[in-house]
Image (cartoon, rainbow, N blue to C red):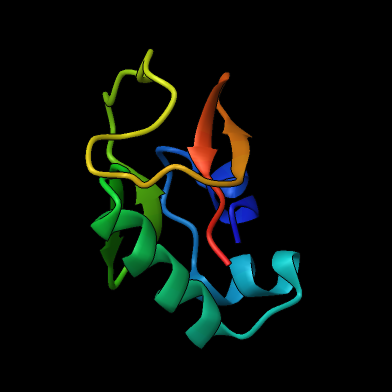
Length: 84
């Protein structure tokens, strides 16, 4: 669900809103956000919703630290591992 990365901004977005836009369940959004966080992406999850950590510079490398090689998706001008 690399598309989740395309929707996240520095502003909080509810899991329900993200789920509707992605046509998946809120649980799927939560699960994928946790995977992205574990892969090193600057994802914040709170009662307010999901967002990219404010002030985070866009990486220049092809994948975040600790991410495995494999299919990718574009996020903010760089390639991110595609989460399935």
